[in-house]
Image 1 (spheres, rainbow, N blue to C red):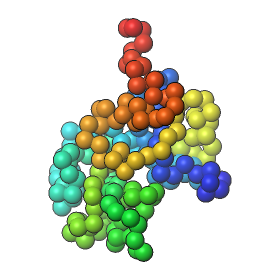
Image 2: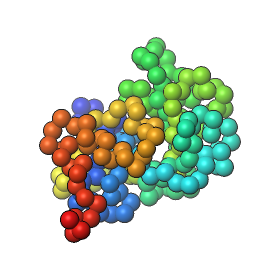
Image 3: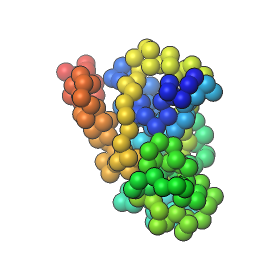
Image 4: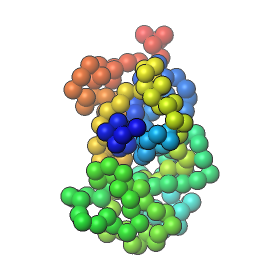
Length: 189
């Protein structure tokens, strides 16, 4: 796989035919996609768990929705964080933050939160992640399980995660926008 064929930094938006409860109506940010497989986090699955209850010092940086999100079905006992660094990329990324794509990057939760406090525009914490073995994601894309679209920095910190699926589809300049009206249960239509 070449860098040009990598989907790192893009969104996977579940199609209406994807009914697996882990991914139905989900929006996944791909953090890594290469010949080893793919890894991402579900952006629209908040949990009732507060960040302050599991990560000391990070809640203040988590903004107006300081809860942990379920990033996927894998590794639910681990945490990772994504943050947006506003402005144009500089010569060096902030200490404790690794750029994934554009202004979006991974946060080192082992770093002291104070080091990043002045650098981050928004932060979101995830329990677990979503993962695909080599070729698995490509197979799911071929089967029509996912729409592959560009991410925007605001997707990471969306204040209404229950509306993110529709919002991402609505902004597409293609027939995908029509799926925003697809009913949750088409049998009730």
